[in-house]
Every structure is written in structure tokens, then in C-alpha cells.
Image 1 (cartoon, rainbow, N blue to C red):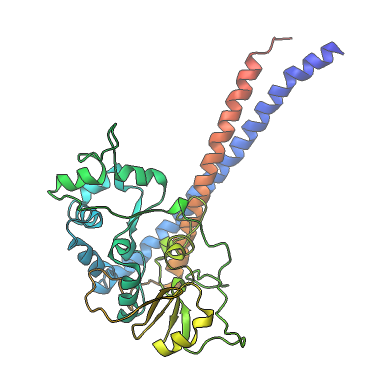
Image 2: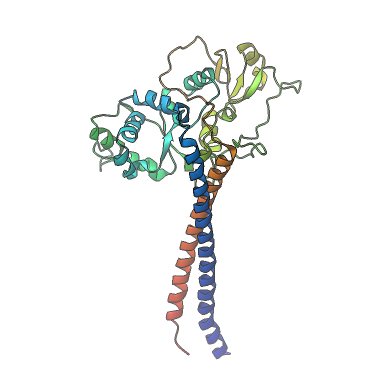
Length: 350
């Protein structure tokens, strides 16, 4: 019996080693398959780029106007970031502090018309429109460094970057950490290429949808395909994270009269295309505003490529997300394999 227990104790690490080796082999096979799939899809994307290059025009850069508006905010963190990326691109590509930055809020969505663009700019405010969006908390930490007394280091982070081009950040600035934003918990509208959220339409006490209701703002912004899927480690896109947290259930109506008639079913504010604005229950913004420093760009006729292109790009993002998860699994299996080998080597030979 003692000999049997001794043999079992010796054989168990051997079996563990074999199991972890098999798991690693399987994961490596999956990783290689994904690498090949990504390469094939990138070749197909290259054909689209070649075909469209001859037709290149200004409509291919719908966010350029918004970028210029941000550049005019010279003393803002967003303005400094855009300046470096626009005019010092080679230097920017090597900066670890901006590698986690996805972009500026104002450049991450498009809308159908200038009226809606102005309304959303006013609703969010300049500080939010200039907000810097990071994927992880490591990206947030890289933007600003502190000394032992908690004071900001002017020679590090985004402050140091500003100093390098003769700019100084004026006051505070907003930064969003996508991995810390609670995503929308519901589903998506079936077969919608923009992954719009499945939100229930507002209902009046009589059970009818209010007259003039257009949609929820979160579903009225248009996102680039690369931002629809797998922006975060959890696989979420920008609509259900950033823009859901910015707009929540904010509603849009055709007119002020429509909006006011719908008050019983407005829970998180509303806008009307003729300038009406309710930021939250009981808080009405009256008057009008003409000047908007930074706005969302408009959807243009060439703002999106063909559906096949979009599907390929989306597939690549999903595969890269799967690739990231497999790499994590491989690291865990390797650690377990190393432990099993160490346990085996520590056993007495029989």
C-alpha cells in the first residue's frame, strides 16, 4: 500500500506535465490558426485600400474638421495631444503615454446633421468633448505623473509632452478609462451593423410612444467599425461603454412641443431639434447658443466603406481579441507546467 501511494504521488506530477503540455500545444495551434486568419483578412483589406486610393477625396477624412477645432484649443490637454499626433507623428508613435489613448471624445463619433452635432456639443460641454479616452487605467496613469508630495511633474506625462512643444496645459482636463466604465447590461438590436442598443421606446401613461420621438442619443451617433467591437479587454465597444455612460437614456424629439408633451416618460433628459434641452428631470436649459468650439463631425457619403470591408475589419478585431485571450491562457498554462515540472523534479526517484 505504501509503495502504491508513493507511485501515485510520483505519477501525478508526470500526468500534470503531460496535461499542461497538451493544453499548450492545443493553444499554440489555435494561436497559429488565428495568426493565419488575420493575415488573410489583412490581405483582403489591402485590396480594398488599393481600389479606393484612386478615388481619395476630402470626404475620406470626416474627423479632420473636428481635429482642427481641437487644435485651436491650444492650452488644452486634447489640443496638445492632437498637435503632437498631427505634426509630430513619428515622435508620437514612440511615446508610451499615448499608446493606450483611443482618441478624443469629439473625434470618436459622427452624427447625421449639424443641428444634432451642435445640440450634443452643448449638452456635453467643451470639457467633455475634449475628454481623452484611454482603454485602461495604465493609460490614465501615464497621462500624469506626481512627485513624492503629490504635486504634478511638469516634465512628465502629458504635461511634459506639452512643454516639449512649447505648450502648457491650462487647468484640469477630463480623461475616461474604458475598462472602468460600467457597460450597458442589455442586448443589441438584431442584425444592426452599428450595434445599436436594444432600448425600450418611451411610453406615455396611455401606453403610446410620444409623438415626435426620434430615438435615444446613444443610438444616433455613428461609430467607426474599429470601435464597435472589442475595444476593451471584455470585448465591449464604445457605444455600450463610453457613449452609454455619456448619454444614458437621453431622448431626442422633433420639436420642443413634442418634448414637453412627453415629460411624463422622460427619465434621463431630452433634446429637441429646434433647440429644446432638458438635462435632467426638472432642469430646463432656456435661451439659445450660436458658437460651438468643438463639434462631432458629420456622416458623409464616403464616411464608411463597403459592408464587406466593415465585416472584414470587424472580424479582424474579434480575432485579435481572441488572440489576446489565448495568449493569456498560454501564459497561465506555462506557469502551471513550470510548477508541475518543479514538483516532479523534487520527487525521489524510484
